[in-house]
Amino acid sequence: MEESLGGGAVWSTYKARRFGERGVIRLLSHDAAQSEAVRERFGAVRSVVERVGHASALQVRDTGESKDGDLFARFELAEGDSLANALREASAQLPAGVRPLGRRPSTMAVELALRVTCGVLDCLAAAHERGVLHRDVRLETIFLADRRTGRVRLGNFGMVAVLDATKVWGTRLDSIAFLAPEQAMGLVDQLDARADLFAVGAVLHTLVTGQLFHADKTQEEALMAAATKPVRPVSRLGYGVPDAVSDILERSLAWDRRNRYGSAREMQAALEEALVALSGDRPSDGT
Image (cartoon, rainbow, N blue to C red; front, side):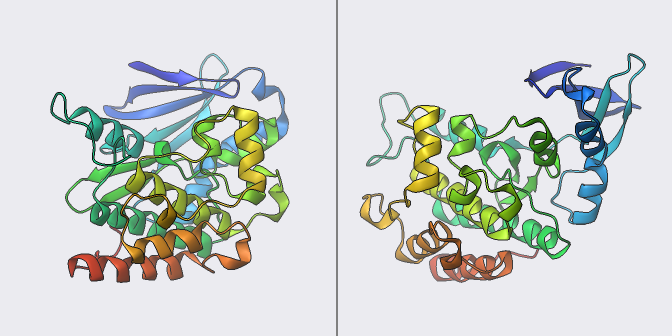
């Protein structure tokens, strides 16, 4: 183990080196490991990622049990920073005494934000076509591997199933901001790909506005708002987001999932068209 990356009630996370390769190891807590369902789902994470079969999905190198009897999963170390860190860095790089324009505390250029979300959707489309939902798409699980092209890596496939078995989920504000209403209601058995598409819309909204949904509320208030209140259209908030992008956000963040995009491919195509309209360029496959 080289460095602790934090932990919680279910697992602890460390940077580590094994057989000369750096990676990230998650150790299942002793309490969580008492549940056979949790142990089974934790051990199945590698097979979930293999089912996704997309180059942007962070790989699980191996799973097993340590000499001390702890269950572990060793993940590929992500290239680049998480989107959360990228936004914080964008804010920190402003010259002294200079404030962002308008009401944006830290944002990403719209064209780069579109490339990033296209890459996320390309990975999710592959997952959905193989029957895998992500259910944890947020700034902390997306990594910006190439700032020029917007190439991304997506982590945490399969991990929410572990949390389901422990009943520990959806209590942090930085997670609640990306929950679809049906997810915030706890309707786990009724979720489909459109919950992931809502989360991608929430990521894009945050990248171009610098604002999380419900950030001014307590955890309980935020969860209630996520479950019951439609997202206010970005076109009414004064951020100057291009109309084509505002339209995509409004549809992807629809409270009623029947009004969202029907698939990741459909939403990806809409984003690509918006990118062409703004820059005259189209992202390559998998970026």
